[in-house]
Length: 196
Image 1: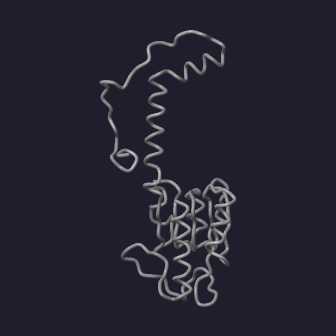
Image 2 (image 1 turned 90 degrees about the horizontal axis):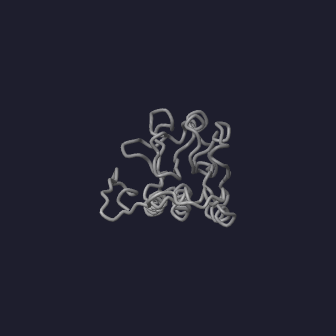
Image 3 (image 1 turned 180 degrees about the horizontal axis):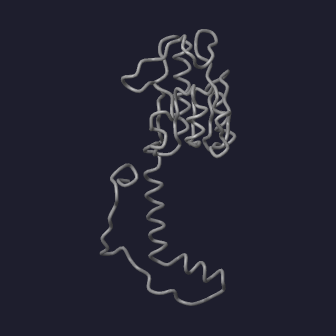
């Protein structure tokens, strides 16, 4: 996910610098006028302010900074982002509260969630008109489906019960363990996670 995001931010900045393109937009929306209220401009292209709430290592933060030199980048945690933090931001990477986005994200042109779902940001009025909303759909299918099977097997084999008994120094059987052999399994949804 990080490499895609870095690449997209770099391409977007270069498009503004060269005058050959603009921010990605939702189909059917007109680009905003250069004279309309919005982010400040410098050197003929909009000044970018990126709010980055992705969970990053120090090396990953450095990669983001190197990918967009001269662009204001602020690294915060989702839970701490306020409307005031979002004022003037043109790019938002993360999942802050809907209220913060609605109140402070009036200059946003692109929001990318680190989650697969982004439904809470889709109602009219949450993001400014013409802003692009993207998500990390497809990034979690294998890991979430493997985690689901690990939890399923742990429960079927009563591992939480054995762990609790061991911690309490109780040495007794907890009942019969179950098996998947011959079992019928229902998978609700055939999206990226359900089909992995």
